[in-house]
Amino acid sequence: MEKSGTQTPLSLAAAQAVRTYAATTRSALGSAESPVISYAGLWLLLASLAPVAATETEEILGLNRADARAAALRLLEAPHPTIGAAVAGWLRPGVELKKGLPVVLDPLPEQAGLDAWAEENTRGLINEFPLEIDAQTLIVLASALVVTPRWSEPLDDDGNGFLLLEGGFQAVVETEAAGPVAVACPASEDGISVYSVIAADGVAAEDVWRAADEVVRRIDAGEVRNHGFDPDGVAPGHAWTVQEITVLGGAPSDRWRSHLPAWSAEDRHDLSAAPGVAEIARGVMAAVEEESEATCVQKAVASYTSEGFEAAAVTGMMVRAAAAPRETTVRQIDLRFDRPHAVVALARGGAWEGIPLFDSWVTPA
Image (cartoon, rainbow, N blue to C red; front, side, top):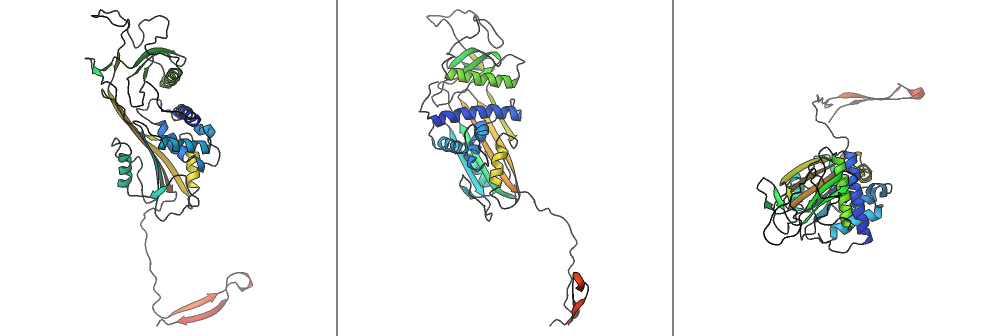
């Protein structure tokens, strides 16, 4: 649970910006019950492209255009024990831009090339790019985010189909958003804290997320301690039991255990309506000569096992030509003037309207 590294004012501001963006986007998309989604992955892509926005991005991304771009670059370049992050862009050969973009654009590959990029930058967790390109694709921009922390000690089986955590961080915390919640987080030396937060049955998912944000904020501020029990009196609750047991030898007065499910999930999200996407997309489309349209999609996966946690997301933004040519069936009629024929030059408009000015009889050679 120890924090490592040094946070600069910009990185502190970026962390707050991403937290706020996650809450705002969760509410805007109604994605509180999504099996897995990475708001950070979307933020990273948008922040990398922030300079193209026509107006400042502070209200949307939490930082102005310059700071958002700088924060994204710092995150992409900062070493971390388990986080992998990448941003890339591709341009269809032959397409000319009216202005440059803040992301280096490589030649647009075939679909297999984008799939390979996704696989390489997610440590094999995602092997298909979330968007399919076609003949109308002009620009593709993407971010990839992956984490694969291991627990300091593998979790045991509790004999009832759950994983058993006996160390790490465990507490019961009273929250404003959802009342008392149980919190569990296995220890890891890989610079990632994976908190599980459960509220009473019937509490809305949106409120549970607000409670989770509150818990993390209070833990980081030192207001919640490990094995803390916020509600008055240690008593059974909606997700915990309290009982006295007899053990051999000396032992701490409290013995905490969390029974956690092993799980895996994957999901695909249309993020075109997410905050900031339209603004950034308009800036990207402004660089293209022809009329265009944009879409933004994310594919995300995650798994929680006795050994650790794995999660990855690839977020793609695609700009396509708006007027796609359609295939249709027509009658083709060819007229051949390969024999002698007449040619007449007629005046059009004004006083001369309809007067044949010259007549020619043409005899092809």
